[in-house]
Length: 333
Image (cartoon, rainbow, N blue to C red; front, side, top):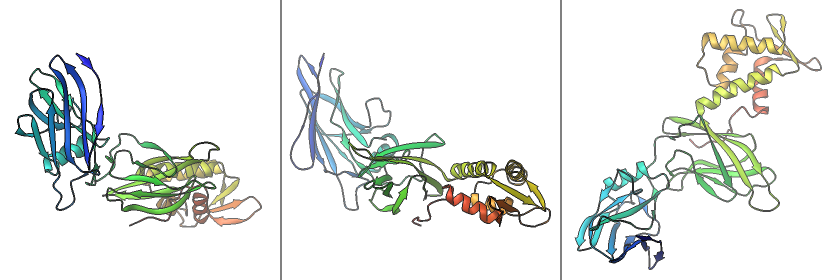
């Protein structure tokens, strides 16, 4: 059997056909009609897109909709003529299949011919309007690289939420996160390298961190971002804060006794591990463990280079803000 591919688009809306195989009996193909230019699933109220698949070149036993040829999740098309099949794309069955099994947001119509051949249509792309209740990625941290003036789906969002960038200029860029209805999950805000942008989906908290913004002499500028759960980001931020404490050029004072930076960081780790090992909020960590003595209630003090002395809680809050360990204040509730 000789294999070849060809595609043609015609008319209003998406109307195409694909030749994927040829036999002694002629070429098989599937022609699609009735699909809007911008297919949204489920369709808006009152929408009822009915896809018609016309099989050419031979007799078809059956036809079905699926994300790919090997997918076990499929929706059967109804035969309406000898070699013509239809399906209501607005049905709950189709929406359920495509909300689970199509990370690239495209599907095909397949047909089985009487000789056992399987024919595939062109890919049909769509926008999913169902909001998942969280991001489903099997890693502690996901990385997103995105060109300026472009957008990209967030990992694990099934294409529903998209990160969008403006022009990268002077080390800054306008950033937003939009949902499937093009409404802002995170309103447009200006960010620079190191900024942490919090947002919530359902009951889950996430943080998007600007890792770097790259200006190129030739080509499109781009940004690199990391995405973590809110909990993972907070845990990492506390450890990074304690690393900064260890490296500080300062003396810490606890109940009149001077401690080196390393000794003070170890003290804070022991207090946290003993009283609240699962604590992840950096502000609560500073207030609960790093501001005052548990024994006496007296505030910890820090003496910095030059002799100035501050309460440690205030000093740590300023240090966290300076080292981008606090989240970007702008967020959409």
